[in-house]
Amino acid sequence: MHYDAVVVGAGISGSIVAERLASKGKKMLIIEKRGHIAGNIYDRYNSDGILIHEYGPHLFHTNSKRVFEYLSKFTKWRKYVHKVLAYVDGKYVPIPINRTTINLIYGLNLSTDEEAARYLDSVKETYNKITNAKEAVVSKVGYDLYKKLFEGYTKKQWGVDPEKLSPEITQRIPVRINTDDRYFTDIYQMMPLEGYTKMVEKILSNDNIEIRLNSDYKDIINKIDYNILVYTGPIDYFFDYKYGKLRYRSLRFEFLTYEQEIIQPAAVINYPDKKIPYTRCMEFKHATGQRCKKTTIEREYPQSEGEPYYPMLTDQDKYLYLKYEKESQLIKNTFFVGRLAEFKYYNMDQAAMSALKMSDNILKLLDKE
Ligand code: FAD
Ligand code: UDP
Image (cartoon, rainbow, N blue to C red; front, side, top):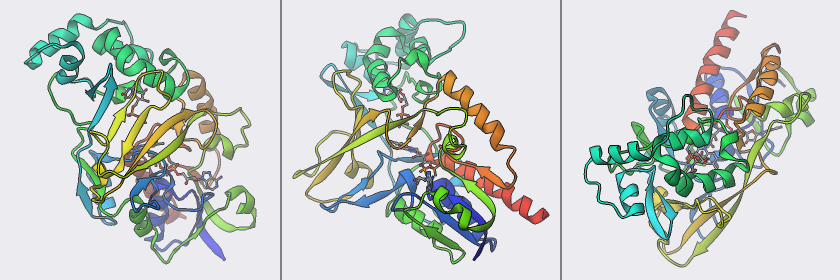
């Protein structure tokens, strides 16, 4: 059997590239080392019948019409606006920090945006240049709010001091002077009506796509006849770690089911307290809208060993990535796309966009040949 392209990884990135090329008549093979499709957006019903996210809370949000319209071909949506509370000093407060957060933490009564802005101006610190994840927060909300809401969470999540991390990590979380308590402000915010796995199943249901699960591509690639390779796994693994190992942060997930309809006041509660070993806790039913007597929550315990989930954005790792990236650009007919292969802190819509663009490029190239 000859394949026009082999895709390594059946996550959202690999699945989209496979679908785009298959839709143009290309014969595709996907090799996936796990026993299921969908990568980290995989969801499934647990033994209590509750739809859970196997690899941490996944909320879809995007400003990209292209990504939204593309995915809408494969799923209907459920409207859902994500909200997160942080548990601080015995209270639940909105995160991202907004006027309500400041009022609740300090027992204040700031009643206008201007008052909140003045408050933040009085506590924030000025830097000539923001160089790390700590300064990115302190420059906006001052040291005390940083300490209460970011320091412990970030140290737990990444296992290094926030000063060692790139500012873009904490800059993901905005600071607001109004009372908007949405986690995301993107135009499109929703959940796939039947879940992410069903959506990916539909993306992959094409006669030109064959899927081989439970296989590391390195074990079988030499026996396969193909023209193009699209790789979505960790880039350092592809090169047998020749320049050294990139660091990816991992997580252990703990699932608990309760005989109760709902157990926590929001879909996600963040726990910045250093003494609590997990970072956050997701209760799925808030986001999926499922109605049933029991409920399942999932706690995230960060760790350095295990499945690579987050690229560690430190100067050292970014520098090492550049070496691999440079080398990857020299290999003919091999393309690197996705969160692990591009070593980027992509949300799923960004991974989807990167995969759509990569597919356009590959198709152009194939047309030329
Ligand atoms: P992956 O999903 O990692 O897929 C790569 C696939 O390649 C995997 O299935 C892997 O098994 C396979 N693979 C790797 N190596 C090999 C090999 N050697 N051989 C064969 N197969 C291999 N994004 C959002 O937009 N909203 C959220 O709320 C959100 N929450 C998140 C929460 C957590 C805890 C995490 C970790 C991520 C979250 N994300 C979220 C990000 C989102 O998961 C990613 O952007 C997206 O899943 C990336 O897709 P991908 O296909 O690039 O990578
Ligand atoms: N963060 C934090 N406290 C919070 C929320 C986020 O310190 O309550 C920091 C932390 O470093 C985290 C980063 O901001 O890793 C990005 O948060 P996000 O919720 O986007 O993380 P993800 O959903 O990607 O795990």
